[in-house]
Length: 416
Image 1: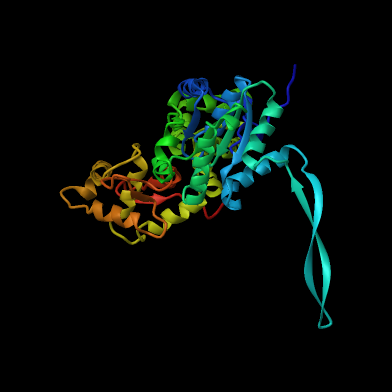
Image 2 (image 1 turned 60 degrees about the vertical axis):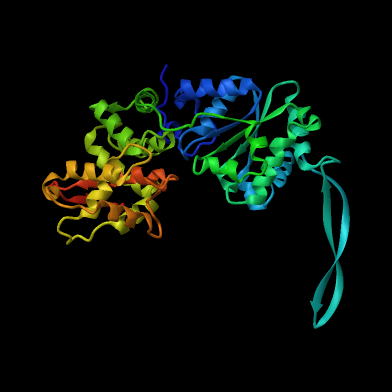
């Protein structure tokens, strides 16, 4: 039976919060660890870089296990200056608050220079006698019946710098051991980016009490190469029915520039799919530069601008800083020392580095103290790491060796 071709935006969905079932790639190790954690009865903490697939992972696993999921956003708690306020929002989204009465307040109006009193009505709403956290647990249990339920606290990083919210979170975790709160049988799944993950614990009051109640899951990081291949193949071949010439080369390039992070793969493949759509649903290596440009423009423009501002001027004879930036893009480890970068610079730019002192430590130090640094000192202070993983991807897609192999050029995106 004939089926209409799918559109690229129906297949590659980088902004979708709901799981795109046809494009979900199994990640067995992470899934089995999460399942074991759920069976342990402890509250769970799962973390990973933005775009690593944390949300799809936990939603897919919980759906497969028929566990009811309720999500409270800690970014909203940060905005409201209260986790309890977000719990109240969660309840309010699930049921209409009951209006219980009115209060009257005096409002001063100025009419032709004469103040007069007018009444302003303010509605008073109540969820009953329970405070917001218990009301939230009760609401979840009422909706879930006898089925297992999980309360997700998403975007943990949003409250990292707020001591009051960290204290509130510590109290929430501790209260779940209290008989009154435990009786609702709702467990927590806390989700966030790694950042200074262990600093959350150190900054959280009652450190031991909180840590003893939390089971930390392995980090959700980049996909394996096979998982990345499966995602790209599933999207272009199975779903979109595209023709790809030299598919191994195309997959290799996408895997490299996106650092195999699921959201970034979806972003890049969406741009490439749009280009292929105009090319008779055919893709080959000649389209990758164009896809790089569109991806840089649409998803990494801010990072591109920062890196561009750090590059050597065109008339610089050697462009050592450009060589260093290019070499930073080639590093694969999360942390690196200046000696690691110097080794890459010497290997990649043999002619212009032979028997010369390169001053890589000074260049890296300068890149780490800019207004928008692309690298920063690691927690141990003896190495560096990227201040944002997107800088590594941007460097890979943006910088090229010129025809003079010791010079580095940027891929221009201004014409897009």
